[in-house]
Image (cartoon, rainbow over all chains, first blue to last red; front, side, top):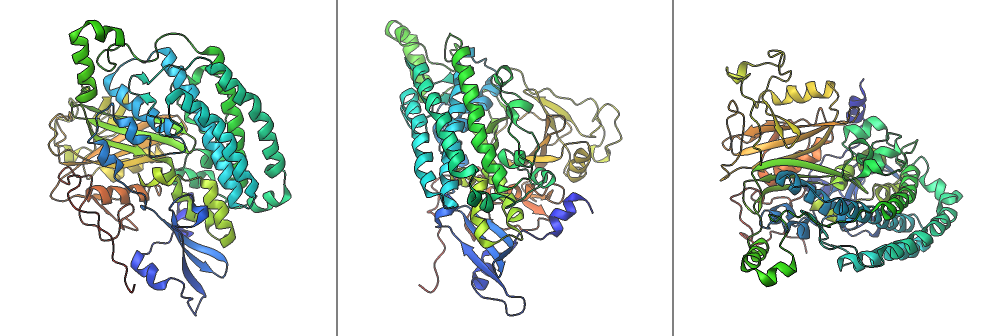
Length: 418
Length: 180
């Protein structure tokens, strides 16, 4: 029996129509004591509107099925009606915990079709901001993961630390979330004066706080009891199900796009890939906690190595003329006006770009027909694919552990449903 | 800007007869193009499933992404001459984690019979993606274990990402709650 057959025969996925699930909901089968229950979509631990239909026998979860789509707003359709310049405002709302990554993958795809070169400084600013965003996203995970498992104090601490990072984002981009900062051609604005000191103050305070988290959770017997050996997944299963990010790495497989298929300037910075051993909930927690430390290392290097120069491409096709030119040249004014009303045209073609978001491989498949709006824009959302591992992780476990497992996948429903 | 390069020299005959071993220059038996440095394969409809299986043995073991596309009204598409353009396409992104390389597969799907074999037997991870493509474009994946709507509500009419499904065309449909 191959590994794949094992995955299929284990019968972990509940394949049942909604009508049938409704009929059988909360009715105990007299023969084998199985029953179907619905968890969500309004359950506090499901991180938004995730509903899980589960088949239980006593307290054991047999089969389950994540039911999604409650947040579906047709963002891929909306993208077909927005210019390439407006595109980031749309995609940034998908994964609201790490918006800069979606902006980045979209911008990389547009730049690949345009074949424009991005200045060094823009590349390094993107890397700096994305790593800060990875930290804020993982801090949010620690907060919700802690709360889900009963470490309610963690909820406050995680949000507090995340707020430090968001405060810096607000200073740079004008917004705490949904930044529209990374755009095709570079970034929206240069880093503000004193950015080094601002980041340094975050980097000074965080290591100590992370050690407090270790005391509060990592070393605690209750925490370990609730997470160790729970929701185990193997490397073969994770790969077959397309899972990436911390879920794949928790199985001990060191796959990280930043290292394996480097983009931006990740081949010029030092960092380690954090991997787990057992593929359980604890490993996924520990990976995210330690990835904050690795991101801090990258951010430190970005501070030291940040090159000077323009923060967006000089290519006038994509970038509007500088303010001073508009004052003296009518053509420059027209050019500026056209870029923001009509948008710039992108040559026909199709491309796929991928970045390592805090949740896994975040890709953008983009098709252009030569006009100023995409013909097709598809986001490969890591949470959407990773959710498929849920039935396999929960299979045979206790209902109480289902919460721990859902939390450890760290799904962002805005990205799942798009 | 460079156009997608065409490779038509080794597929002049009947493409239906080309098998994977037939052509020594091209191990996949279907036209290969390069799109912005990314390798794209264009198999025929009936080669698709076997190709995915062959590629899996060659190391492309992760199906990273599967999505549909509607080319209605888009005449700018460049395809190898042996591939006849159809309205729909299924695009599969495969990843070889051992060698860190990617491959993209584009299959043409006619509007008249929007069916294609499911690859969820080969890549279980494609299951949700195929359900999404079914929702959005009405593409039917033959042999799919659970062809139910995933992002759309049960009983939704129409396929939103089709080009003839305009935005704001119909009010949002909600299922009536029975017995309340």
